[in-house]
Image (cartoon, rainbow, N blue to C red; front, side, top):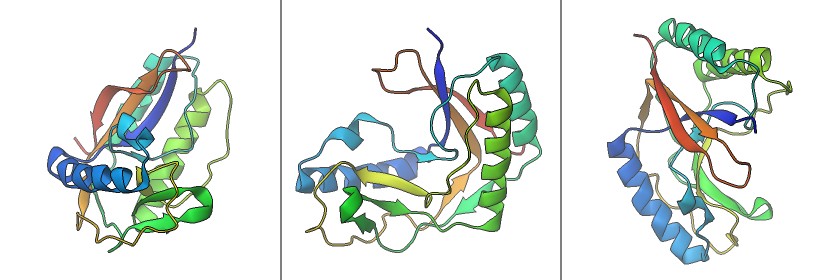
Length: 174
C-alpha cells in the first residue's frame, strides 16, 4: 500500500496547550470528540496525497523552506462558528505572505503527487469541534494572539482507515 502525506502547521507547545484547553471545553459542550483524535493543526495545502518519490519531495521541500522566512500568524479575535458545516474553530487572518507560501507548497505537492489537485483556499483555521451541532454555541475569545510559523510538519498515513501521524518537522529559514 502507498503511504499518504499531508503538509500542516502544528503550533508550538505553549500555543497548543492554550488551544487544547479551549478545544476540550468546546468538544464537551457539543458532545463531539472526533477533533480530539488529531493533533492541533492548520492545513497548509488541500487534502492528503500520495506521491511518486518521497525523498525527492522532501529535498525540494527543505530547499523551499530554507528560502522562506518565518511568518507570524494572527488569529481572529473570536472563534468562528459555521452551523451548516457543523464546524467551529479558530480562523487565521490570511496575508499575502501565507497565501504565497500555500501556492508554493501546492505547486510542489502537485509536482510530486500521483494525482494533481487544484488548491481550494478555504479559510485558514484550527478546528475546535467537527462534526458537531454548533448552532447554540457562543463565540469564545481566541486563546492565542499570534503564532509563529517557523516549521512545517509532514504527516503520514500508511492505512486509509487510520489517522495521520507526525512524520517529520522541517524548519523554515534555516
